[in-house]
Image (tube, rainbow, N blue to C red):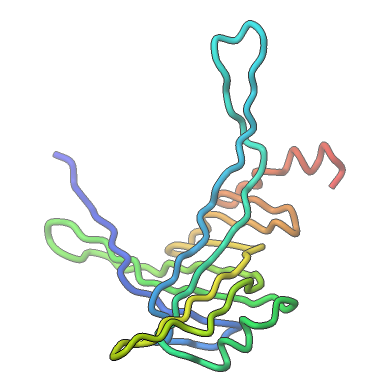
Length: 173
């Protein structure tokens, strides 16, 4: 009989340049890693195929639950890189209930490309969503590195394995 285990991640905290912003972010949309694929087709092939050709631009969105001047001052400067850390508690459940809790942390570096003046509605909290262009992303779960991407340093690691090692050697990087 297989033992079913279910992971749940339902809450997190945001840090900006090391400052704890507990309770200020309503929602965080972490970057989606999207591989660029180059199509290959040739005479004699019954079809076409796609192969890895790089990583598409990375983007992070954070919805704030109120106007925070120190946050918006940071977001307003397009020339200064900002470090974002999203720390979460990953819970594992089985038939006996919760059996494990481990940290899950995303590290991001980038510059903000959109910052709001806000959406204000009667009798509702104003909404402020910022958009960050990400150049560095790393995910660690239970002290294990899942991936690391640094587009400015030409780093792409999956589980500590350098996906670009041969490429960098071949081009003399």
